[in-house]
Length: 140
Image (cartoon, rainbow, N blue to C red; front, side, top):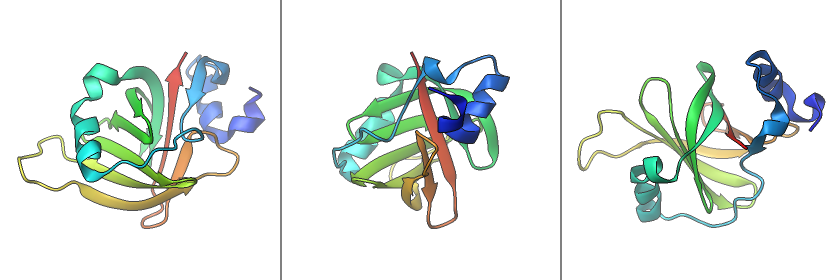
């Protein structure tokens, strides 16, 4: 994949010595709708299904992460220990959630609103609520 086709995210990968062709970008092939129950189950199952990757999230530089992708969902842990969960609800749209690292039973995740793909940046999504952006790529 040429560097221009993956945008800024790939430029950051080059700085780390990793190359875009070593990663599979998430987001284009997510087709299933996740319900709240499945979303919660996905969040609990991260260690069993996660693969090493490279992530970014508004407020953090690019960071190594373990990315869990299941049907229409992507989950990864942020550098502060919080869990980010994305559930695609339809083609080209999904919902984002942030689950506190110290979550207690019955505590609801923070709803981050709707996200849509960022044109020209494979694996990146932009939120309409607070303009939060995340990118996730699994190392191959």
